[in-house]
Length: 143
Image 1 (cartoon, rainbow, N blue to C red):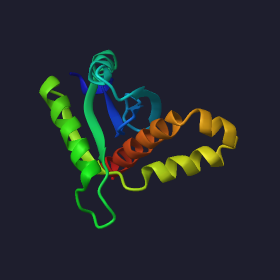
Image 2 (tube, helix red, strand yellow; image 1 turned 60 degrees about the vertical axis):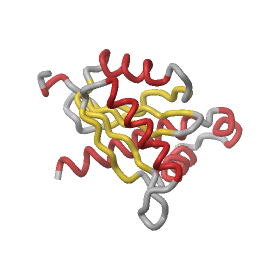
Image 3 (cartoon, rainbow, N blue to C red; image 1 turned 135 degrees about the vertical axis):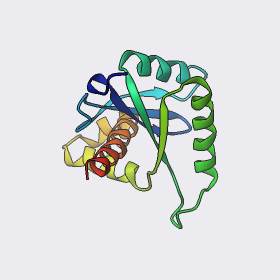
Image 4 (spheres, rainbow, N blue to C red; image 1 turned 180 degrees about the horizontal axis):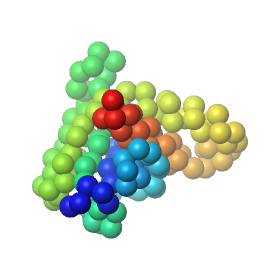
């Protein structure tokens, strides 16, 4: 893969929904892509996006507990990562994602999204959270 035309993908894994984000080809800016249902088809959808968007690296948020330890939710994410690794050769990088959903919710509120619309589109939080964690990774890598 030519580094010039590849992207990074951010994944905010949830038991019900999975938020997805992509970087621009220069790997400077992360943007929310979509939210998908966490069901039997989710891996196929993710793999399809990886191929279509020429994804070079996947950044998955690992929800550590407040002490920084792996809890039940992080174990679930690790199982998801294992399944994903079995189906793709794309490098998968894990980062601490504590508070990304809270930050995403605050961002959506700050954008002026009415409460009723926020309640109707709960998947937007997952999408924005995936963009926040991917942007954090991009910012760290640039330094």
